[in-house]
Each structure stands twice: as C-alpha cells, then as structure tokens.
Length: 380
Image 1 (cartoon, rainbow, N blue to C red):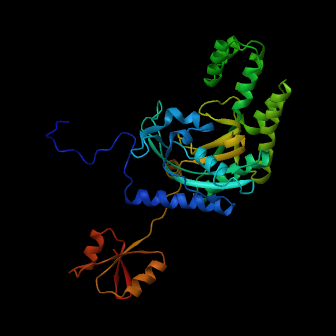
Image 2 (cartoon, rainbow, N blue to C red):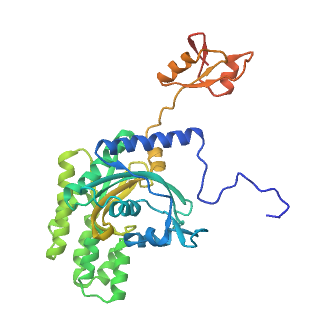
C-alpha cells in the first residue's frame, strides 16, 4: 500500500473476523448454555489470562504448543510473552499453583479466545474460541468416561443431532512400536505410516509387530467391533493394560448413555501433542469439522488429568438455530414500567429517543418485529 493511500480499516489479518450482532449473540448464548451444563456437574469456572510469560505458558505439557504460539516482548519487564494457543495447560497451571491445596478430584471449566499460528490446511483459523472442562487429580476409567458424558450432555443442550465420540489411545501404538527394537529411522517411518493408515508401508516396516499393527488399522470402527478385534490380539502385558482401559471406559459410557454413538480407532495419532492416555474426538453427522477433542494427560508435577475442549464456533454451525430475543420498538414517552415488563417476558426493547411521525416505520427501520402502541404489541 502506498503511504499516500487511505488505509482500509475494514481489512483484518488472515484468520481474524468480526462477529456481528446475531452471530456474536448466538455464540455468547451457546457458550453460556454449555458452561451451564458444566456447572451443573460441579465444574467450577476459571479464567486464565490471554497473555502469559513464555516460560510458564510453555512449561511441561505446554512445550508441545510452542510452534503454535504467537510471541511478543513485554515492554515493561523485557521478557518474552506468548498469546495462549490453548487453555488446557493454563488450567493445569492454575490447579498446580493457585489451587494446589484444593481437594482432588478438582473439576474446572473455562471459556475464552485463543490465538494460534496457522497450521497447514488451517491457516485461516488463527483466533479460535474454546469452552471446556478439566478433571484433575484422578486417573480412572470413570474419570475418562465422565468427561465424555458431560460433553455429550452439553451438545444435547445445544440440540446437536447425531453426535459421535471417537476414542483412541495414542500411547498404545506408540508403546508397541517403541518396544519393537526398531532403528530410530525405521521407527519414525513406521509411526508416519500408521499415522497415514498406510497398511502396505506398515507391513513393510513393522517387522514382527506388523500383523498386530495391521489388525489394529482394520479394527477402527464401532466400539463393540473394534474392542472385540483388540481383545483377540496377542499384546504384551503393558499394552494389554492400555487396551483394557479403553474397554473399561467404553463400558462405563455405554452403561450411563447407551444411545451415545462411540467409535474406536486404536491407531489414531494425529494431533495429540501432550496426551498420555485415552483421547476423544467429537463429531456430528454432516459436519466436516470436529466439534471438540480432549483426553488424558499429565498436568504440572505429573498430576493425572483428563479434559475435553469444545469449539463453540463449530458447535453453532451444527446446532439448531438459537432463537434471538424479539425486538419491540417503544416510542418515546411510553412508561418505562411497560418496557420493563416486556423485558421480563423475554423481549428486547428498543427505546425511541425522540418523537417520530410513524412509529411503525421507525420500528421496521430499526429491525424490530413489534411496535408498542398503548399497552398492545403490533406486529410489523
């Protein structure tokens, strides 16, 4: 742009957008509906800061987020800071510091904006919104299942149909490959082949564990069938324990929510930077984007934790439309008590600030559905 040109003040950086009236209202109400479900299950809300010193933001499990983090220098302390790309590790920090003396299991919820460096294929998503829960201080199948069940209830509150949870255990296949005695190069190539679901490459590179890995590749699908396939495999004891944990989590969920659709992918690795146990990804039929993801990880000081983060902007594309408040134009001079009564009934009142010749035309101009005339509502 020439220094003599007027700047285009409507132009925003790639990956950042303005949400206008109805969009912002729908997002806010959707987030609050989700947060209300979390609160009803005992998850107490915390609000980490948008900016932290780099040393604390990328501590521990946060190291996996280094490449996604925007950085800038604090003009006061001259220390490097980072814009949070994810809130999970921030909540883990709060649990280990501010709430270190709180009884476990600790149930926390959160909602807010994050800023990420664009990843390949998702460069347009640089400001995202998150709403999620963290269950900290206990490692059990019941805890893993609770996170899934609470998230499922939140999605039901938004009337999102045909939801499914895809469960995986990245550490299971990673441990199996690590114990196979392969060279570093072969191991890296095999992990890449598993990640691509390339059965031919897995057969070529896997050596003695190739048949087991191939069977795992083909096991992905509905939970019952996938678990049956896993049960039939000859796995080392430590790996069998992981497979049994997956089975136990599915059993707890199925007992409490038998209609919830569950799938299992034993070899899913992609995108799990710091997770150590059961992981879950949320989908809805007809939606290309995942609605959320989460799983088990180690928080500060190696404390057991499990959580799930939902993406409100994606949820609202899958949810039934949120009914906005009906707007009523209230001409100047009307008693405030009448307008207050309308607000109590769920209407939004738009007050006339001066007398106009035609209240109905003014109401239409301001996007109202009704105009107040005496004590009656006239539909426009």
